Length: 218
Image (cartoon, rainbow, N blue to C red; front, side, top):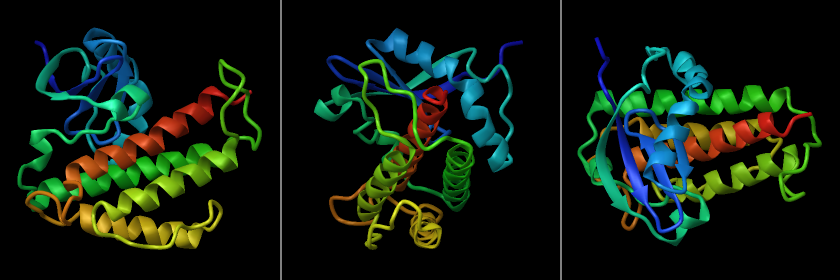
């Protein structure tokens, strides 16, 4: 018997399509079209599984066997650049206490996976396909820089930590989790992000670079 289809959001750019698992923040992959994006998402199920395990959530091997497109979102220049940049209508819905708790738990697990991967990643990474790409410490600094900016979209305004200041990074992340883990009804600040989208964007960015570290390690 087939399992329950995985609900996905498709963000439709002109040169890229992002497929994001609606209930699994950070499980997002892109492709040149809808079919390629869904195929990439399915391929990354095994790489995302440690996040679900860390969060203490069931994640069956068949989870990506079938998809249900819950929503197609018009993309923009951010989408085409390579970032999931548009909240879905489903992410604007009221966030219950239970959903908020799940979002914060999964985001925390994504950070834990990033930290585990970074801890065993060498400082110098193999260059990317065009001879470029950040080394580990610059990548970690970029992640923290982005998280400091993302945090402002949910009302958390803190000084950007240094990439190796574990105490300050922990304080920033805990402040983000307080907001993500609270019930809400739409964006929590004017012109900000709804918390489900914030969790998705932050977790995606952390995991995307964590997986890049793995792929570019000698």
